[in-house]
Length: 262
Image 1 (spheres, rainbow, N blue to C red):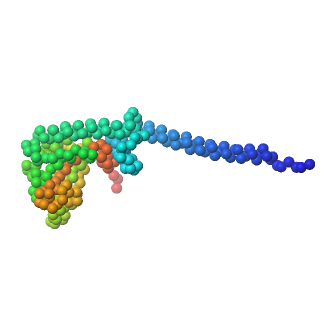
Image 2 (cartoon, rainbow, N blue to C red; image 1 turned 30 degrees about the vertical axis):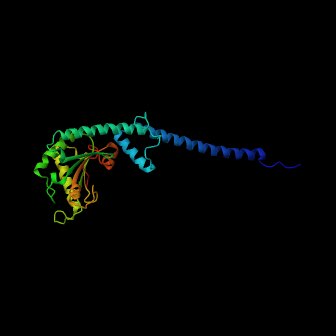
Image 3 (cartoon, one colour; image 1 turned 90 degrees about the horizontal axis):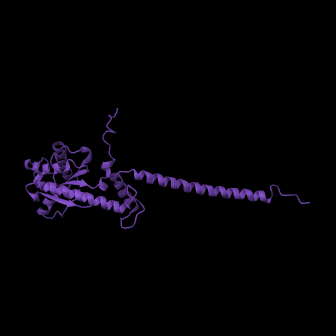
């Protein structure tokens, strides 16, 4: 009589079925884990404030190289509207705020031509030609510049937006003990305006930054004296909420104010 094979056909088949079931369970477990992570992210986003969410949206747009023309599966901070609709709404509200700032400044300056205004994707740029704020080759504010900066300070001091002061120069070289290059000159002018707005108008220094670009961001080709004069300028930029970038990633007042131990 033939001897029965140990374990039998049923035993071998049963072991194979068990292994297949384990593979199915692993796939199912991975799916559940991914779904849990997705809902955790959605819940966290529902608690985000507008400024931080817009900053996240801008970062993701760069990472995924989206242009905003296609529909998005990401929703706004309240989870009620597609993100592009929410951003358009917030952008329109910000533009209205910028227009109010412009009207406020224009109502308090003597010469409307002394200050220029640009509203674009970065926010509101309040532009001063260097001749109305500084003497040539200097970074000390002129006496008659105070009235112009006072109009800006009064319009912005109660505004919670981030403000970036940017100094610019033409391409004519400068080489003095105080200013070895246009980098130092443009930076010093930016700092002078920033300090004035903070010290005279109590603007929050946590919401301000100061930059010097030298001659490397001209508005016009530096081919004529008229163009060079236009390139020598100081821009006070009131940033849109999705353009604050590194400003919102700095230390938060009241949290990181403890002294550093040596």
